[in-house]
Length: 164
Image (cartoon, rainbow, N blue to C red; front, side, top):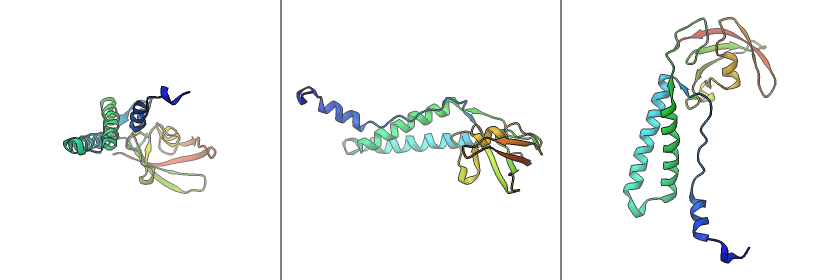
């Protein structure tokens, strides 16, 4: 194709647009703390967007486009959030429960089942719809459940359930 038929301005403008963040199709269950985090994130992004917009012509156009994309995503997540009641049971795992489980080697781990946007595995916050979350959700104290992991299935035992 001849270069005469390429609209370089249009191609450059498209290259600067950030890729949209994909919104999960799963139900957006959130804990009350997760809702607070979403609200805080939206407020933070709105503030950063206002600061960048106030710069007028001096604004970083790419930063502004990134902030607008993230604002669209987090506003949508906030709008679709379904807050679950605080977990109160010590007998059955719910979203929000802190769960201590033991693996086949008697190694104990403690995790909390939370919504997708609150998940942080390094801090023991596990998405309720992850393989571990699905294995634990609805389990009862002393149940053995099958954790279907990419590295291979593993039986784990629920040894403690703490409400939030």
